Image (cartoon, rainbow, N blue to C red; front, side, top):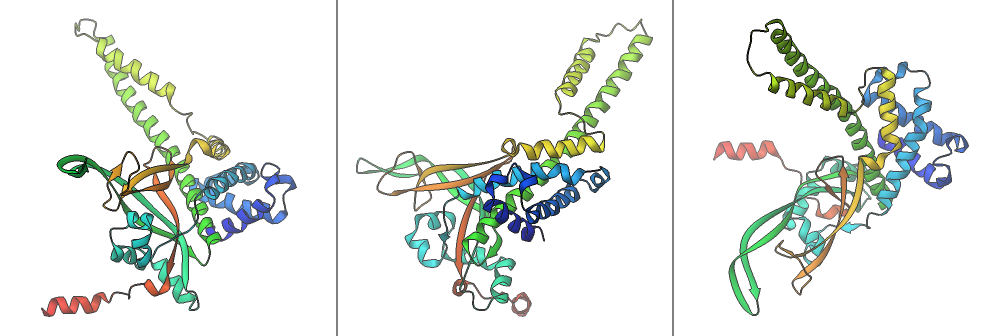
Length: 339
């Protein structure tokens, strides 16, 4: 259900963009949608936050702020890339993203969401969606043409794309952009939750180590005759004390947890970012520092979430007539066993 009311709320708030930071003036339908999203956020982070009076109301403006920020990021993503066998040959971007024409068809055909969309809409000739991938760069030896001579064992950088995923296919570009917005929003909430868990886990581990070192120091204090050098012990204790001071504020109470969510949603730019990277690549997947006759410029829209590796995000279109037949695994297993 999240994509449904996220989609609706993105649309309503975009029509009244001047109200991003003026929630009391926004339409009641906007506030209702944001309240539904606030409930989703609480369910994901900790349903105990429902116990805080006015918690949903306090989340309204931070959520609207985050949605406005995400909306701006996604609107900067380039337009639709048509992914089909013919464009694999004619479009350098499609050629770079997929291994070959069969791989292109397999990526979309393996998506149950794509199949379900076409099955539920028999008249739909093509679908639009969000394609996410990871770019992998590798250094390798290859051949290069220099001054009319072929040189072997030239160090080159190859760029390939892996971990292809199709998200929330729909019938038009607007639905594809909404899918990207929903994907970023859900990833942001997951990051906020993981950050809270990580902070508490790290603090617990540091306190446990400090307690063990403190117990050892007390034993030394009770035995003055022990001539061992205790400087290393004191050094470790001071180091842990500093680490505890440098940590994020502890999320001890429910109010602490709610403030953590509000602060993160009030400053989404500190967690999620978008960037466009330009690379020059030839049809063999080799990067070139400068443009030349064999290379093409490839503009990559990347989404960065916290300290995670960036993911390439691309809005794509795929035709029904290029969908591969559904595999019959039982028939294939029977052939294998009979052979």
